[in-house]
Length: 222
Image 1 (cartoon, rainbow, N blue to C red):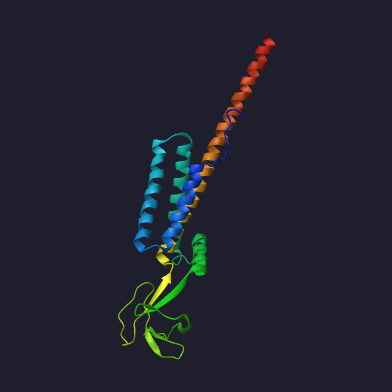
Image 2 (image 1 turned 45 degrees about the horizontal axis):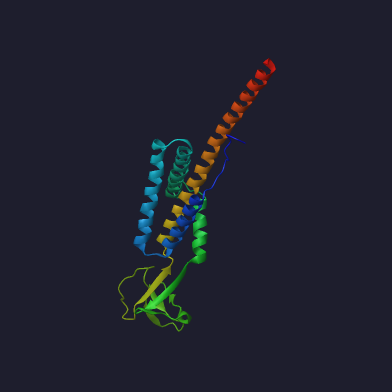
């Protein structure tokens, strides 16, 4: 019908952008720490750019910017307020989106051990004795475990044992929260655009009815 817009539309460029963002976020999980930080900065610059579009665009673009900004920034503020005050107000559980990230991380995380820079055999997977020392399956101290992706000096005189957690927890949660921010922002934007088009379609339908009535009246007059 002429003058009517589809409520939801996806262009090729839009789909390419979505999959590109997902690819970058996935890659940043296993990338060095500085790459994750660069991705975080770029993501927030993108959010601020969309926020600025509220004042410099019109029509669907402005509706998109409003919906995205409200949901993206609103989610970020809400989840941070919830997590910060969870213990203070004795809230029963973590934010659902954070719990989802916790579950996914538990499924994909794994540890690798290195002794003096060489891979530590999996069959000799060490066990901590509660003091930070590492014992092999025979109960012999083989080294001092480092903190995940870091470490401290060996004080036992034994070989230094390094524990590498893959993927890095900070990288994972940074990418995860960026994903939620963009997802809620995008959904809010699409819904806001759809609401605006519903209003435009109603106006177009009303105009068509009025034009049809005038045409009928004109024909009757003749």
